[in-house]
Image (cartoon, rainbow over all chains, first blue to last red; front, side):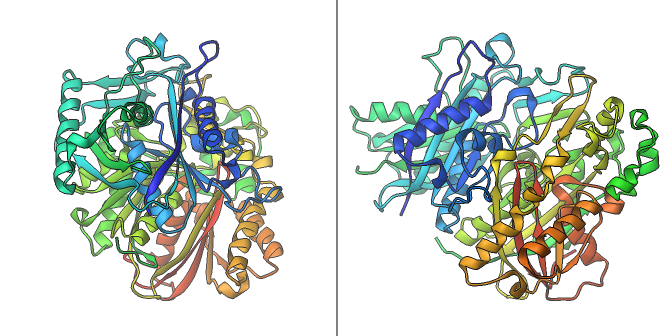
Length: 284
Length: 352
């Protein structure tokens, strides 16, 4: 049985308040649970793959704070839940969702969890990405609810990773030597010139390699690539770790009027590394 | 896809900075504390502290790299054999003062080690980070997704102690726990278990998120540095300490077993402080109504080393040469989140 996306959601910030990963990811996760009509108590594992977060918080895992926001396994002694939820952050730049899908497959295969929630939320540490012209990403969250399908043909295929033999051309860091007292609101994202072109090339090469390895007909495959813009939120920047979620929701709309019956997720991120995974929706 | 029943701990490695800071030396840097006896409260005599000179290679990344190489020296595998590299550092300092968000530490470690084709990602789960990496790697090995892999973490934890020393005004300050940390790195190689004498029997983890706000780490807004704010009283209250035995006991009960029947030889608690370890063991003894196995600790010498504490303690124990082959170990995480759980393993031929 394959692992399928039961529900997905994306959330943009309310412009009247500082953007927060905990708030955005919490809302996206609750939206996905509501669409699937499943209770928070049934979630065995929550993985947050976001990279940039409010105040540059490094402890606890943002996933633990999101877990509380969603109401999963608050206190095992006061209210024991059969799923005894567990959560953690998994970070690998823009490839985080596909890494989480891969580990999710192992968690389902070993019976470690029945339902998996992935949140992908990034915000500028200062609370508004629009105020930092040098920061390229949008304040945005996505959530995917994953579980087994009874349809043996549906779900994610293998996740493959492609590592380029060259230095990274994207770096995101907090320079604690120069931050002074502003470390909670400062972040540096440095991208080498020509980054966008190389990203496109790497995505195309990874998709071609994946298609060749698994004999995939790209003519009947809708590619969910890394370059999806948050175009319904003008001027907010590029989607980062949530790009696959945003791309998936758009692909669901496109696929109704398209000959494609399967999706190919392609992510390209810092490292430089790329990841691909085929996905067949249920009932196709 | 082939599946396997169990993974095992194949090799361990560590890296400890050479410089030792005694607790009186640290106390002298914290004028706000007055005559509060840090050593008496924490049980920590000394800790290792990183050398700030870039050439020393003692940033989080450099120490993680050294620990990974140390583990691979004792492993039957070379870096190129690794299917996956998981990094679990909380403090991701590289190139001096840069706190890194991307690329992942794991991507950069895999490249430096020569694990060119390895899957790589970071996990962040406070002091349960390495345990979380081992949990994931165990599941990936058992599902057949990978055959072997490395979980590694390097921590410049004493950076939060520097901030605390500058800013604290009394022992009730939420930064008091920051005075108990020490710097280190640890690495563990896992592969498929083919022999019950070397086996992870189970590793189960849980997050009780009601208490996720009790320990928060972020840059300070008062002085230039990173800081950790902990509500120690609530974090280590008796009800929090009951979470592990309750969760572990339920896991065993569902399988028709009980704690006493597990016949553990050693328990390794998270190395928060000597009193914490004693209290955790006493609470569990009462909850399980069974005696605790021998408790291993290095906290007196190394302080709370965050993500590395269990594997540092285990590696030191095995390297001391007195470990009985075939002994059974219980590792218990206790981390912000709050995360708890249990790792049960029999160890005989671990490369150290």
